[in-house]
Length: 222
Image (tube, rainbow, N blue to C red; front, side, top):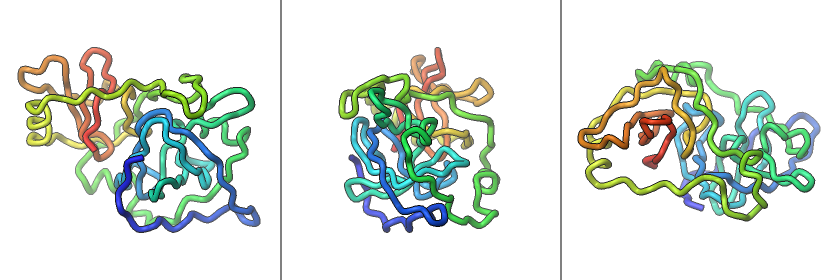
């Protein structure tokens, strides 16, 4: 697991009277860990594809789960956490009741710091949702096995220099930025000179490379 030194996140409140329990999950693809449950919160690290983490609980009203592992604690998007349900490997969040994951309440936030406020303050635009990338139900893999997400190919120095030097308008979308997620048609993806195989955009606080043919995210600058 890739990890950064961050202060320990204060554990979210569990549902009244419920004991704190943990569920073990394996990650379907390299996955951001954020400081809070939402794309308006900063990325504090990343869980590597195939790594195992403890899931302290998931918010019932939003697709975010509090995770902990290898010194990193924060929030991850529940669709990309795989768990065993009987003989099957499934995506955690849609199957949270079957799996029996602890349901927790979202940390109380200042209403002026939510996603809409963050988008307005940063000058970005809320424009729908990412089209889901690799999930457990699709991967159908054994826990601990290889993942269904292809490894991201490292871009050339020329591509990296251009996209990091030429910032574009930020966009915020429901869902998490992962390799293979699709970018909606109403989101502008920008050309890179002399690089017909790439487009780029800034989505949910991260610069990404996008395949211009199928509009899938090819690479994430972390």
